[in-house]
Length: 359
Ligand code: IPM
Ligand code: MG
Image (cartoon, rainbow, N blue to C red; front, side):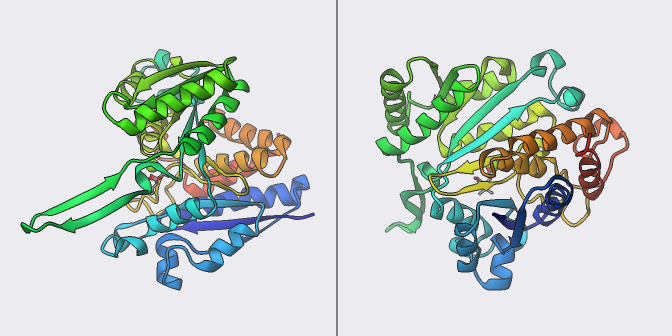
């Protein structure tokens, strides 16, 4: 049976990086027997421009009818003046919520070849291998009430609500503990339990789940401010980090710089029925349309898709191996090239990966 992939390039560099990921699909199909077909659909600002919605119905239907979804990025200054529900971000948050993609896996692995590309000292980052497990469909991103309202005295007030239920915490906690079982067996749950009741509750639920079902795993808790500091001070202390939607958003951007560039971090957003694969970076409007972006985060997201949704760990290894060889051969996009070193374009990077799939 041919596997069906929904491809949602989105906005900005989204279209460029996804094009390179599709070259990898083509190579795997034509040269490595992967039975795969894909169809593109609109999301984000592109969805608004062409279909009047950042998440057109056809896009959602296609995603539901596919074995996996590949997403580029959404957003850009052009759409900032729009009403909130029409903005590109509403499309991304909408598809995550509609498909109930509650677990977002963001692996932070330092490639030896890129140690010089990081702003941190080599001895601090050499060997870093962290998995950030971010809750993706609840928390302050989705809590009600929310909005901007005008008060009786004419002042305005902005409101968001941080809220988690027992089952929402348990299901993400389980995913983190299970991931840790396949790694070095340690989970650090990140919260702000000293101030926020919602995350005090998060800590209680994670602790109880650990005692009842996962006592073989080593569990620690850390406040988010300390975690942000420890990630830079001594990142090797972490194995699996499990945290809320917003803390995960922030800490994963921070952690990406351990690897040299946010352009290196793939992710998998997984629910009970569906899965979507997306680089963690955004649409980078400043470099969009210039063939400058780093497509490796998207290509590595394809590897995650092969492993987790398409049941082809052999091909996932092949793609990751090709990326590794590209880096060993010194091929760098601008974000990775230290101090004026020569670099390749987005499309050349995609070609370079495809050229090395055979080795
Ligand atoms: C991410 C992004 C998104 C998020 C934005 C684009 C809505 O920053 O995937 O990390 O905040 O989740
Ligand atoms: Mg983010």
